[in-house]
Image 1 (cartoon, helix red, strand yellow):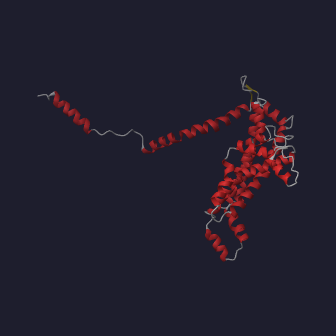
Image 2: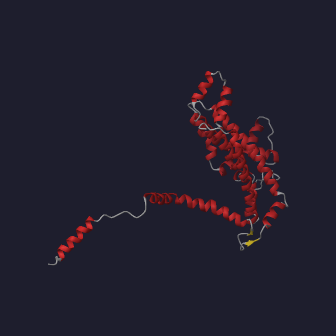
Image 3: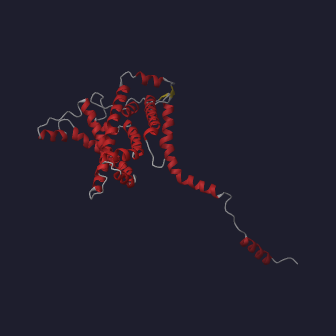
Length: 322
């Protein structure tokens, strides 16, 4: 006797309800990796779009002639020859000024940042106010601060010279004399980055165990001995980090100088930097290939300096866990 349709239907439902559905045939590790890639995808897209793609584009443009209006043409090493020929001396001016700014800015901002961090190491009621006041220029828009500094240094109507004139001092022509223009740019960049250096050094000081200083005092060490033999060696990783980042940022000075000098790099090209040269080649002369070549020159310079810095760091950077 064959089972009735109703009994066959009940049997089918019972077998269906007792069936266990397995998860997809991906292992747990593979699933976690896929989720990890999914969450970092926005960051990776940004990195590929705004970092990798421009680098590859600059590499292609270095061997091509393109002015953004006509089709790109491969020219071999013509852009390199034209840049290194430096007919108008702009590359030499840019390299010289960028080097002067770097050698002036980096030591000053690091020394002053360390000094302020050491002086404000002890907690006070106004410590938070000091930190905010020093760090505020670093996080404020550079364009706004640069305009303020321009009106402070402007010939004839500058606030600094006006104040000096009140006390009977004839202020220098800050933006009309090459030497004083460089001094003004260095002073501005140091003032802008002082708060950042202070905060990083302050964090490094807080990471030094107090027991080291207590043991030194028991042994009769002076304040200078503590600073020389404890603070400076244990701050060397922080110093190394700031040294590397400040060198890179100093070589990339552009917006501040461009706004203060009105985009000329004057007077007499005394504040003309490498990045200004790159910008001018690309968007004033529309020589995208030559601009890419100078960009690679800047990259190679920074790569060599950073590599040398890392090699030499083994001699003077000390880590507490070593």
